[in-house]
Each structure stands twice: as structure tokens, then as C-alpha cells.
Length: 262
Image 1 (spheres, one colour):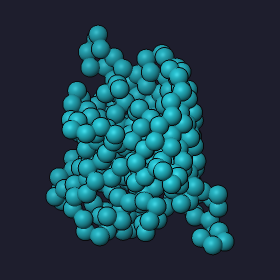
Image 2: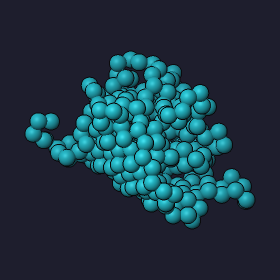
Image 3: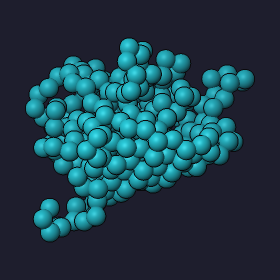
Image 4: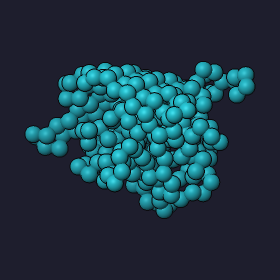
């Protein structure tokens, strides 16, 4: 796995298929910066648009970045994800288009929850793969509600297992720890704060390891401010090789539909 695309997995985090908080549909636009300094250079943008209708959730993510650590080491990535998830979090169908340093890849995947576990069927330029994930694996939209529910319940540390479509098409084991207030890096100076609907929020640290392998070192970590409506801000992604900051620039909340039996 390229460590340069680790930050893509954050948006694919968290919802449970039991009692859970309801994430609010929204579109969030971010600016990406290299490092944690307030004047760090801009290296790209990210957009996530999550909508809901009576059939389920629909995810669109568009990320574009170019990182130059030296005159010899440069990394560019454009990634577009389109995915659909039932309201009950029982599956996920997606199409992923990525261009990494000029190399184009298109991946299609289907993940479905069954009695024996969560079955994944993924087709990519490197071939097709089929495998079974643990039954507790959460779908991308589903995982956010699980995170918020646990934080609302005053859990200060807990694990989550979530499917990731963008980094390596498998499950991540995510260890979540609530941080002390004021731990997150401050907002870049001179930027107008984005208005977020009123409600509680929590600073958290999330470490990511491969979900189907044991005794592995974390692949990367992410600190972020998590709002109870599912919006994320003040992200810092630490890959070990470099750090990337993602700051909310624009937020649009969508209306949830009134569906029979919902």
C-alpha cells in the first residue's frame, strides 16, 4: 500500500448496524496542507458529499493532491469514489477511479453482509478477489454513526472494524481514543471559521491497522474533531513519512427524506 494515500481512508470510517446515532447528510469541502504548521503549503483539496434517500445512502468523494517532499520525490493523486449503502448498513457497492503519478486505475466492488460474515467481491486492474470479512465489519457510512454513538455514551477508548474502499479494499481495525480538549492543532490563522450546526463535538485520535492481520504495527493515525452530526474537521493524518492537515472550508447540510417506516 502506498503510504501517500493513507489519508483517503478516514472518510471511509465508521456506523453500526445496531442502535446508533443518525449521521446527517451533508457536503463538506476541505483544503489539504502539508505538515502541521499554520502556514503549511496547500497541496490539494478534498470533497465528500453524502446524501440520503429512501433507498439508502449515496457517497461521492473527490480528492486531488500533489506532494513534493524534494525535487526528486513527488506524489500526485486524483481519486473519485461513487458508492451506495443501504440504510441498514448491510452492504456497499462502489466504483473507484484513481490516477496516481499518471497511472490510472478503476476498481469496482460489492460488499454484502450475510449469515457467515461479510462477503467482498472486488474487481481491479490487478485482478478479481473474493474474501470474507468478520461479521462485525462496518460499512463506510455506517461507521460514522458508531463513532458518534460511542462518544455520546462517554466511551473514551474503543475499537471499530470498518471496510475501506480507497486504500487497499479490505477492513481496517481502528482504535479510537478521545483526546484532551485543546489537543488538536488550531485553525490556520486568517481563515473564516465554517459554521457547523450546534451540538457536541469531541477531539479524537484514530490509529489504523489491517483488520484481518494480527500483531501489526499501525499503518497511520488520524486526529480530528468529530461533531455529533458526523461532520469532521481539523484532521491531521500522520503516515510516519509525512503529515497532512485537512481543514473544513465549506459545509452544506442536506435534508433527510421522510420515508415510510423510517
